[in-house]
Image (tube, rainbow, N blue to C red; front, side, top):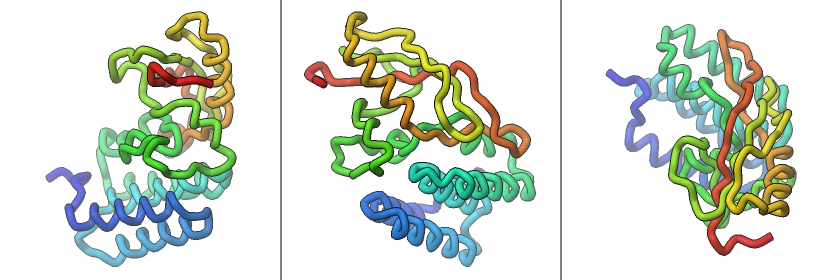
Length: 212
């Protein structure tokens, strides 16, 4: 049995809550996410993996708003829950195997165009419509590929632009550099602890008519 499979009914409830907390303030979003966790704890049909996933979502929300200590505490609790119940390394890596740029647009299929407002401290992420791993999809007409390290606290360091189209798009490259500096990342975890990830690559994909 795949313990990471989402029960359809629960997923509908969860997605509705996600939309709700993204559109609201930090306190309202936190309350909604904690309510999800309480509902999952009370429902015997919800696996520990989905409960851990909800804890991670709360940590992501806290990290977006700069609550780093709270976020790391929730990540740690989620990791501890998964290891306590003997989930495989593959299952744990679905949540902690690599840094995740926040907000996690790809996960929820959200883009800036969908009309969701971002926290003020992340407003520079509007520089790109979608954040994707550099290897995932074909090159768009305009793009910037950046390489950087992600610290255990989820910040980008040693940022370098390694490719772009057009190659002489200085203003575009500068905008992406500024964007990466303010993006929060869920850090990678090894043996229950957040660690540095070196030379992570992201491709910022932009439409052909994108202008600064």
